[in-house]
Amino acid sequence: MRALLAVLAMVWALAFGAAAQDLSALARLDAGQSHLQGDAGGVEIALAISQPVPWRVRLLDDPPRLILDMREVDWKGVETLALPTPVRALRAGVFRPGWSRLVVELDGPWTVARSEMQTGDPGAVVRLALEPATAAAFAAEAARPEPAEWAAPKAADLPPSPVQGSGPVVVVLDPGHGGIDPGAEREGQTEAKLMLTFARELKEALLRDGRFKVVMTRNEDVFVPLETRISIARAAGATVFLSLHADALAEGEAQGATVYTLAEEATDEAAQALAERHDRDDLLAGLDLSAQDDVVVTVLMDMARTETQPRVDRLAGHLVGAIKGAELRMHRHPHQQGGFSVLKSPDIPSALVELGFLSSARDLKRLEDPEWRARMAAALVAGLAAWAEEDRAIRAVKGG
Ligand SMILES: [Zn+2]
Image (tube, rainbow, N blue to C red):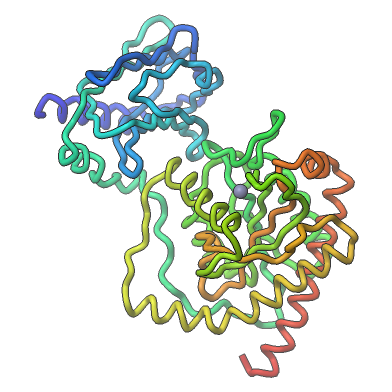
């Protein structure tokens, strides 16, 4: 155990000591020289990269997984690696600006017996040896806190409601997924990239309108935890929060835009599954930031939600009305509800728009069509404008 700690300490020192150096060049994975092998008795991982970079390794639970963070590594080709039985899956991509992450999903409790980077000229090989561990040892290791510089920003405490004066309407646009979490994937397209493209276009359309200020939760292909997205909305003093998605649904016939709002009781199983999948993707890619339930905070949040609920309902109504008004294809149940974590700001009216479903070939074609996207963006601008006007009038009458 002591030896293990020493190795881990070295890895930490390496990762953070070297982080300050200028290592902006991208290293590439050499999949041909890399492998994962082993069985229930032990697993060996060797990853060859084109140049040495700062790195770190750690374990996380629920589900059990090994996290390998490396400075700017292009993981292309990692999907071609064969997986030994104890490794359930690999996922890789940008985790945060400048850092890429490889997530190795494991079939149970394991421990890192050895971890080292062998540097050659000019490449390097990261070698990891995993050994079976007891559940208790694994849990202790996985519970090790992240150093401050790695922890995701904490969701802000509950501040007073954003000011709803006569200033511009602050729209926070949240392109779903990103980086290590690509979201739905079809025919070489990813939900993450399509949503970033659409969000940028919608932002331009909102700014052209003149009544809106726009803040994006991400402006590049990078992973942003769900809680951080809420924190960004909070810090921006958002009037309204719009999360943009185009997931794949198992339900065969699903197509057309759908507006989702938060409710404890999901409209149906598909809506519930969608909300759960987003939580799971977020958890797999990032850290477990499950909120601590404080009774007082919960009561305050419930009160705020009661206030916000009618505003959310009107928001969904205006968005659905505007999309229908533009004669754009909508799902046969255009307004649905589910337990989406990203919609849980108690005092910021929030909605999640599935612009379409990547599981539908027609929807995918629409999302790839700039003309269709422009019409959808115009419809959302119209819906947001109509909602903001009505919302302001109602709140003025109420003296709020
Ligand atoms: Zn999504």
